[in-house]
Length: 428
Image 1 (cartoon, one colour):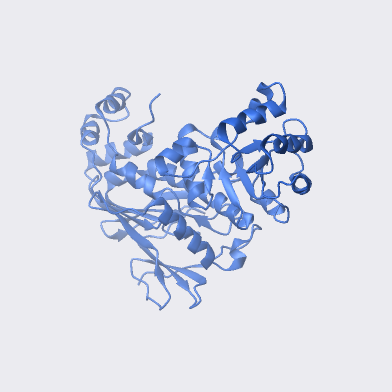
Image 2 (cartoon, rainbow, N blue to C red):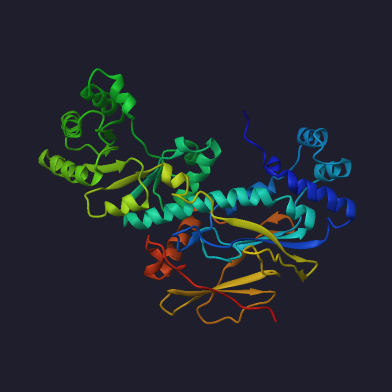
């Protein structure tokens, strides 16, 4: 089955609005939509913007081909006028937003899409699908990176996600600071370093554990990782060193009480002369279990299910709302879902030392700049044409710098207030 084209990520109700707006003459009214989160997931102190570059590339290629138009017409989703409009669809508006890798907080206008109503509203589901998924993964991954305290992490959650989501998740985890992924498609597509080792099935395939280890070492050399917990971990380590020698790069442990086993494994490896052999642990790790292993002799963590599912927060909670029509602010007044009208501009304020102190959001205006302010929005698309996009490594470095800039309390894994308070200055 071929990969779903971005155009059919459009929701039915979006095309209902397009059809009606074309009919009543409002489709071309100049509008501004904003992507923001009303609140952070429970227990979180910051969000991470991720997926923006992926989204811009999808918007660039957003087209409805004849088969898709035929499907929409045949099923009654659109009328003939809307079908003709979709056949010629090209986004001609502007997209601005926070840098990929930027931190965000409740109300942060992380993406602004402006143009005709119809050409903007048709992008809603696409934008939220990409940003909600990637930002959720990146936030979870960033918390794991903090918990790891400088130790390396490998993303290995492809088997717990949709095949395309797995590639996007690997990208988001790498953006957040993971060093490797086991997903080869992500390695090929985004240049992310890949790593991995044999599974238990390979050990079970052979007549005994030593035979399996000998086969792996004969093929890959001693610079490989042997999985030692298929039968008995202590004996597995002895077998690994007996086969590969003390120059073996690493052993991986995927089960048991990892805190106790890591300590015992380090002592055993050292007693066998394998003082440089690393210990990699995996097995349903999240930021809390990684933090609990901080004092143990672990060299690398493998995270799977938790990272690709946002570690309890599978969506970033982002929404895509109309805030301006023909230069006039519009607001939604629904209880608990009210919006602030008008296009927003945001800055992050810092102490002279570089510590972030406040995010200031101004609707319909420009904030008074202070010496250590940093503007948060940048242009991504101008008149339908994408501008130069940051590389993944540049976005990765940007996030690293952002995490350094927030007060240390903001990096805690416990629940608390947002790491940086947000102030919305009313329009004049």
